[in-house]
Amino acid sequence: MRVVFILTGFVALLVSCREEDCTTRVAQSRLDAVNQAKLEQDVAIIDAYLDGEGITAVQDPTGMRYVITQEGTGTKPCLESSITFKYKGMLLSGGSVFDENSTGLTYPLKNLILGWQIVLPQLKAGTKATLYIPSGYGYGSSSLPGIPANSNLIFEIELVSV
Image 1 (cartoon, rainbow, N blue to C red):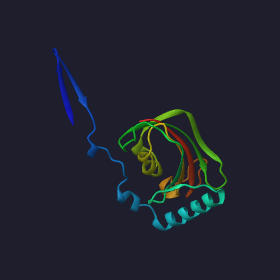
Image 2: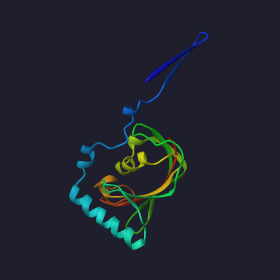
Image 3: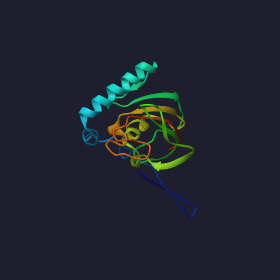
Image 4: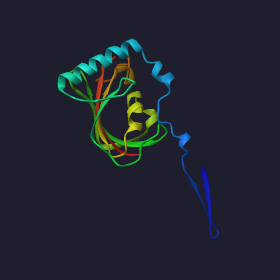
């Protein structure tokens, strides 16, 4: 939607996203591309971990689990949004930290791992949450420094701004 205001010889062009230009759900084809048998196993492992720790999490139908630790009041992001966030990433098995940033990074949400793309459009800026991510929604069968292949992940995140 484009709105043009003419003010005494000045032209101001305001561009805002139309609601239909704001993608808040990952395409089903991307969810279906994840190995469903492995996803089912990972979700069972995550649920057992949460039960064992006495953690009550939101159970997203995709298999994602998350806990909101502080509710924000800002705007919810679209997949097309650039977001600023702080995070700590840990392995579900053993809890070792593989990466963290406490100063804030800014990236388009669509460039981040699938688990973040599933959950973050449901959160308002300012929210702090812990995400429990099945391996297929994280780094899958890829092995990265500090992250073995097929690792289920925990991310403590703060969605600073959208």
